[in-house]
Length: 163
Image (cartoon, rainbow, N blue to C red; front, side):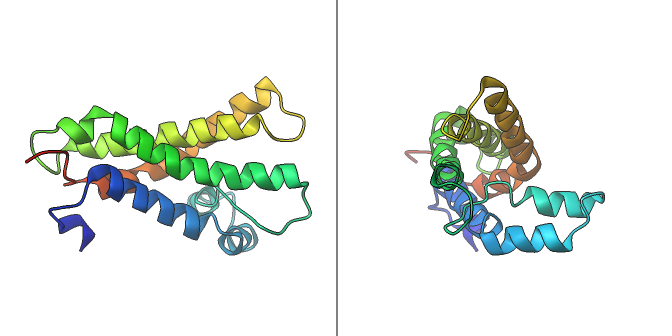
């Protein structure tokens, strides 16, 4: 099991978990399923729809600029997750493997990555505005807050440097 591998790195494991989340739940097939088969007024339906937030697509009736922005958001989410996991000291400096600081550092990295990815890609959409960019960053932070615990769990027990 990946959580018990004593040679995994915390940034690597968290980035892999983020990549899997984006590939599976951001896929057009899952997003269509969640939109068509869940109730947005129930907690479960809301969460299943939220999982599809970093939706990427390759075929749509939207403008090419909107498609590139959506795909770039998904790519930036994974890349920025690695950057923030690497930069946040909790997962690097924890004395004991598997401590809560690793968990919260992974969770926080995902919140920051989602908000920043949404903010940056909102600026390249059609008719960008500061208000739209701030609202997009809020949506990204909401997504990171409610799904970042998965990244936090993935980073638990990761190798932090020289032994």
